[in-house]
Length: 211
Ligand SMILES: Nc1ncnc2c1ncn2[C@@H]1O[C@H](COP(=O)(O)OP(=O)(O)OP(=O)(O)O)[C@@H](O)[C@H]1O
Image (cartoon, rainbow, N blue to C red):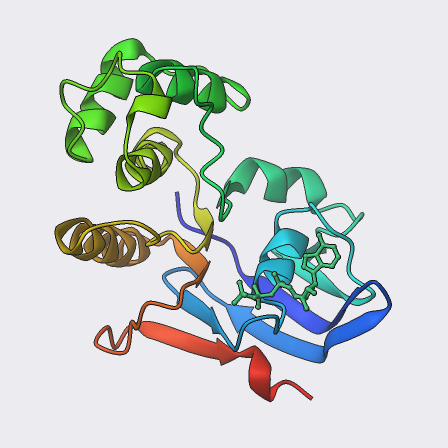
């Protein structure tokens, strides 16, 4: 399933009456990977939260397949097309890795236990299926959250700091997974303070330079 075109149109973001950016415009086609960059407080997470429908924009619009996702006709299609992983992993400490993935996926569509075990094995957590997440390291909890990328079949990923707490091997694996996803027609918007300059396919959107 390839992503449709995403248009960010003259977008303005405010928090507590403070303007973070104004007049932000950008287009993503299927296969694009966009890294939202900028200093602390520039509004990177805020932009991703607007994309995820968790925060309103002060002005401007976002279109998916030519339809507004901010209250317009494109909203439902966008919701079905989007996988958002926030900066916090959203895993529940008292639940096991498997239970976490089962309920997180079920919010959208239930997935089979075997698929969850396969996804956990793919992120290096074979043998941790039944372990409560509070007994896992920060990097292992991040891996549990990232296993959703293997379980939920969505054409658009919006990822806030997905590399946080990962070791080098896991960072390389996630970079490759993002590139493979883009090669198959997916679109990705992500923030990270981790440098992706070595990946020529990744475009930069620098919020520090938005008027
Ligand atoms: N929950 C909140 N309520 C009110 N204002 C907030 C809230 N979270 C962040 N802000 C403000 O919004 C601004 C942008 O925050 P945001 O998290 O989008 O920045 P960022 O570019 O992602 O920063 P970082 O690189 O530190 O993650 C900050 O200046 C902050 O003061």
